[in-house]
Length: 382
Image (tube, rainbow, N blue to C red; front, side, top):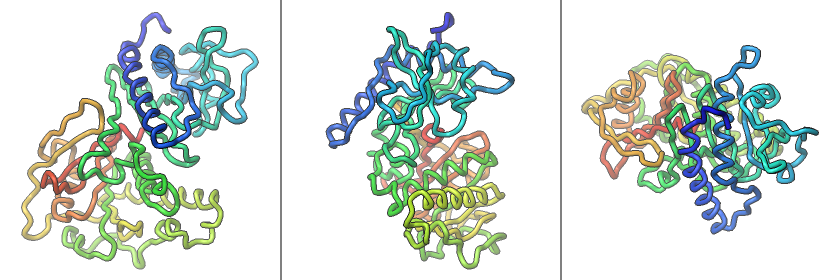
């Protein structure tokens, strides 16, 4: 621990430990195999503290990008082990950070001679192992693995300065919870994370939209419907004819690469980056709910005869979060207002909005509330 001490680490560690314990108990009840130990709150606090101070350092001018797993080397495959473990300090973490900057590589931390230390690096993470990622200076994300090799980690908590947000898994149980939110919380069915399903595709699209940093708006509309055109200024600048169907064909298993899982995954990543890229173009990107890309650069307008959207419910899936009814402009600029108007007019559609500052909002119609519901999910996408 540093002399200064990171106060948020002391506050967050017991809550994070309780979250992991509940998740593991629920997983065991479902018959899932648990291969990772749950670190005690003190170990979590020490790792969070060291990572926070490391995130504020500079090593040869670079910001450290670190991923740390609290795991003994015996619980992973082919670990890279140091002959002499490193001390778990901010200086040591910043120094070794270049070795784990690439995706999928983590520093392994476990006890040696009664003290937590860095024993080496690892690539294979067991389900529910405690993983901490330094996302930016002062921004830490606690997460665990889903179990599938290529699925996104499930976020447990986000610490930014003195702000601590613990993800609320019960958010997926709320009425009108969109599939994307359930997937990010880790409570969708396993089938939805393979080529036969589609929820994970939405997660990857959301991550890709957020990654380009330009902001974007994706409208997902029912297949075979043309009603969405009533809410779009005509003509659309970039209409696709025929629709771009590569993603849909991959999901349905209609391509040659579908016989090889690795080739299929590589092809999926390429096409998602392609679609994510067009969302950076000014205007909305339109895609069907079976993943055929119809247009991009579309301008949203209020459907004839429809009232302007005046209010919506906004929530964030974190513990202690509240549902607030606000005007759409309180969430952001034109993209947010346009997305809310579109969903109010096209109630069987969903809108995904990525902001330039990293915020990400899913707009969906809520029959229970009889209004647009805005789900803030950037905490789950980090």
